[in-house]
Amino acid sequence: MVYFSELKGRPVFDADKKNIGVLTDLVFIHGGDYAEITHIVCVFEDKSVRKIRFSLVDELKGEKSRVSEKIIVHLNKPLSKITCFFIEDKDLILSEVVDKQVIDVNGAKIVRVNDILLGKVGGKFSVVAVAVGKKSFLKRIGLKSFANSTKLKEQIIAWESVEALEPRMHGLHLKVQKNKIADLHPEDIADVMEDMSHKERVLIFNTLDKQVAAETLIGAEPEVQQSVFRSIKVDRIKELLEDIQTDQAADILSLMDESEVEEILGRLRADKAKAITKILNYDPESAGAIMDTSFIMIPETQTAQQTIDLLRKIAPSSDKIYHIYVVDRQRRLVGILSIRGLLIAPPDEKVGEIMHREVIHVKTDTPKEDIAKTIARYDIFVIPVVSDDNVLRGVVTADDVLTEIMPDEWKRERFRPHRTKKNGKR
Image (tube, rainbow, N blue to C red; front, side, top):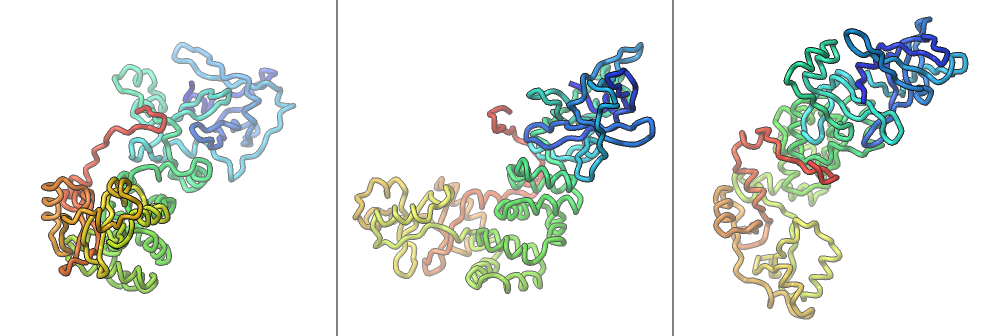
């Protein structure tokens, strides 16, 4: 293993042992967990800057002196037989990473790169990790002996856990590795965005899918929210709102100016705009303001088999299938049906005959604290919300209530839980 700082500025010798120049940079390509080094960049005796294929590097040999060991780059051909190339705008070079901010995806935080760790992976010389701590900084500025004598620990982040913020590199990262940021929890993304510049926030936000983008925006600090709103077009907001849950769409609009809300509502589908407006008109502290209006509702006259066929057709997400709500012709809540009860019922039996008629519920104007007490008292995860005439309007989950009544300082406190990586390691 070798650090980029140990290579930069080191002499390059060809196969004839002639000093042909100085190594100033390395060209790399993204490759998933690692980034392969494809070329070395040299400043030649005539002051020209050109790149040489890394396959022509014979070895990186250490040369010891009284003070330290320095590396010399040896090539396997004489300069006369080497084709050198000029640097292209599309080339990615390591100096674009050093001293830049990147995102530590596993730690969900922004860090500054002090140095880059290189090594052979699968026979290819590659970027293995980035060094971000004080120790790597001291070593890089020439205080290696002092850094090694201290109790400072080297802080290394594997390349697979790094997301670049520089726009040109970030774009390529997305094409090759998908987007590591999108794998984070929206609350963590919101935290990371706090430490970004306005330009970086917009860059990250535009890479998120609509659901993650919505949840990130809702969980972000007001400064981040306004920063994003300043740069995204009305059409982008419209697309975002049309494809997310109605209660989330209402949450986002509640963050915006009244004139902007009216303009966006005017561009949405009539049914979507009507549903969002209805939620916006509820008291912010009530069940109506936080309820989810997408849930599974069936008539009491439907059979068990018809209900199973319906579920197969709509293929609801796992968080929508805890309970099935049963209503009469006026859409009044008359019962609740568990998945277990549905599966063991005779196929031709009516839902009204197998449902539970006693349903714990709250009204649209029930205060959030009372909803929390009800959920805690009866140990339930989700509770239906009805109007004064018992018409089913939505559902509220325990998560919704917890988010609403949790103190703001708890929401924004940056406690980092342990994360299990995809390979099962921490």
